[in-house]
Each structure stands twice: as structure tokens, then as C-alpha cells.
Image 1 (cartoon, helix red, strand yellow):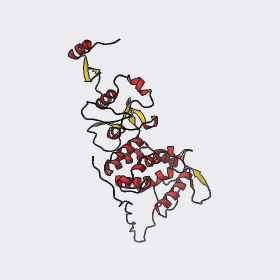
Image 2 (cartoon, helix red, strand yellow):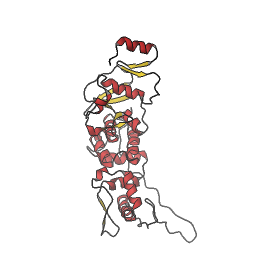
Image 3 (spheres, one colour):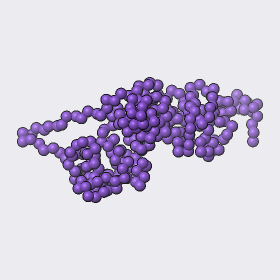
Image 4 (tube, one colour):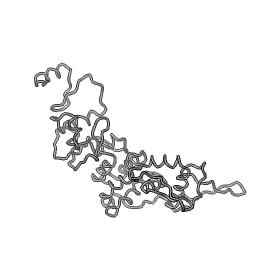
Length: 295
């Protein structure tokens, strides 16, 4: 049943409806929507098509992206003072505080978050890097995506590589770019090493004779969280990982026994006088110049 303009006006005047934007209304007594601004901006991209039809499309005209997507995923500590979207065609909205980027999107680039189409964490990282987000804020987004298992290392490398040169690294050097961001975000080197091992299908045990599978058939789909679960449940995989981890970090660490957790090493021998000594801290492998574009 259609509603005339006059009927809409009467319902707005009487307080039944609240006008959000041209062609967009909501019931005034509905519960508060914490994502109302984002929802209005996305609906305004194509108000003539109903929501369920748009979401059935491979690309629903446009999706929430960049800093807005990072906020919806809970990644990093970016200021989301505007609503950002990416659309496949040029769209100009009259909404204040809304930015519409034009870009190429595929079905693999977005997912639903609280009923809203949002770029995936990996695509969000790539968009933020392309937009010149300062390295410190970008590092916090990468840190959260990896440590929470919201993106795999392979996905992040793929997202970062095209923008490595813009941040002072060799062209397409996604690995070097990622290492600097990880160090800047304060993620322990062991976490990065474990993440790198997650991309390999097998690791070798301390004896070097048996290959222990610690990854899924498609290693790119294994997140850090999944890897940690695997090594926690398998003492053999844990021993193999500790040996590979020590080699990756250039350390000589004894293989832990079955009661030693991941990331722990055997206690050092104590001198006869009861004193103890510790090795000096190893500096982070950073030092490369990174661009601070500022947002």
C-alpha cells in the first residue's frame, strides 16, 4: 500500500514518524539505533530499492568502509567523525558528515555487521592504507585484526602490499610493511613468528625427521587464534613450533616438555650464590621510515 506525501507529512507532524532524510523515515517510538547514522547513510545511497533486494545483490550499490568499517569491526582506535562508504558508481549525498568513495567491490569484499553491509577487515586495512592513514593508527587496526583472528596474515599481506612503497618500503613489500606495523603496534615478535608459521602447511620436529601438520589444507584460512588452539591441544605440534619459532627469531631455545606452555622457555641455571642473570632486551626490528600522512 502506497502512502501519499500528505499522509507522510501528517504522520511526521503528529510525531508518529521521524524524517531522517529524503525518502527515509522511522517510527518515532522505535528503540534507539546505535548505528543510526551509518544506517541512514547506507540507505540514502539507493532509497528506491528495498533493503532485502539490495542485500541479495553481489554488491548492494555500496557498503560502509574505511574508518567507519574499522569502527564497526572494533578495530584500532581511529576517530570515526564521519561516515565513510564505498560505492561502485559516483554518488553524491547531501547528508552532512558523509563521504562516499568510488571503488571496485566484489562479494568477497563485504560482510554483514549488525544488519549493515561493511567491508571485511582485510579490505578495510587495504582501504585505510590506500587513503594514507597514518602508520600508527593503521598499525592498531592491523594488530586487532590479526590478534583477534578477524583476518589471516595472508589476507593482510595482500591488502598491504600495493601500498608498501607509499609508506617508505620497497614496492609490493607487504611482508616488510607488516613487520614494521606489528612492531609499532607493540605486538610481541613471537606473535608475528607464529602468524608466519600459520601460512605454512607443515613444520618440522626437533629431530628433523617428522613433519607435523599444524595448518588447514588452505593455510591462508588459518588465523592466529586457530593456530594457538592447535598448538595448545597437541604437545607434538607445540614442540615443533617452539623449535621453528626459535629458529625464526634467531634464538637457541630448548624444546619444552609437555608441561611447558607456548611461548615459555626452560628456566636458566642459577649461580651458586643464588643470584640470577637475564639477557638484554632485543630491540624491535623497525627503523624503517614510515609515512605519517595524518587523517
